Amino acid sequence: DEVSKMETQPYVFTTRDLSAQETIADLQQFHGANILIHTSIIKSEVKLSQSNFEIALRKLVELQPALRMKIATSAAIDPKKTLTRRFEEMEPVQIDFIFQLADKRDSWIRLVENEMSSVFDSKSGPLWKVIYVELPPGLPRGGHENGSANYGTLQSLASSEPNVTIHSGPTSIISMSTNPHNPHSSHNHEGVLIFKMHHAIADGISLISLLQDQFLPIMN
Image (cartoon, rainbow, N blue to C red; front, side):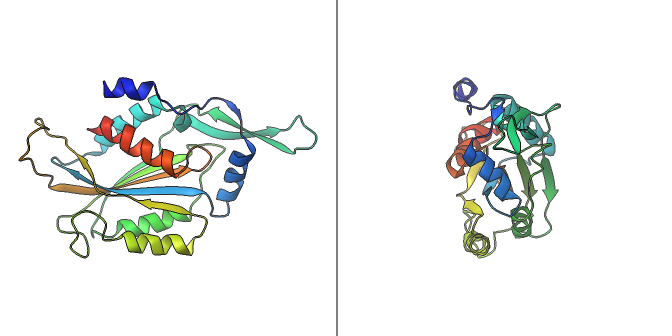
């Protein structure tokens, strides 16, 4: 039922010319602007594998045309324009996903910082990227169990990059057990999920919706 609901509410994306706002977003990302990053602490009853994420991401791509797009350029018909930027579907469709084991619980912060300064290859695609960092056992730095201990650090990084939007959300719970309704179940495995998207295909609200309303239910 959940998947059926998601299939009736895809992002409205098809092969077409970029709007003026989308074109600006593509141009500005080469100068470190309009890069959207959302981080979530994921807690699971079972150890999540790379294949768990790859299967879920492939399903997400099937549901969302925007995730299959690249930005192609061609000579413009309009003499007032030099190039036309156009959404086209990648052939074949690529998914940029990295699964990484962390040696320290705060090592993912450096990954976020690096992603803030790296741009998308719009012409080849994809226009989004996902990183999952499996955390070693122990409480997050500062002893907070809800994953918010590093929020201030992320905000400091964002303030140093005024054109970069960072959303640091609350803990997301994923239950991968054979009995997900067991009230006594424990979530002993933790990781950080980093979703990065080109501003031409998403804004902050739609990025969070994509993660919380569509990707996490698929994983669950």
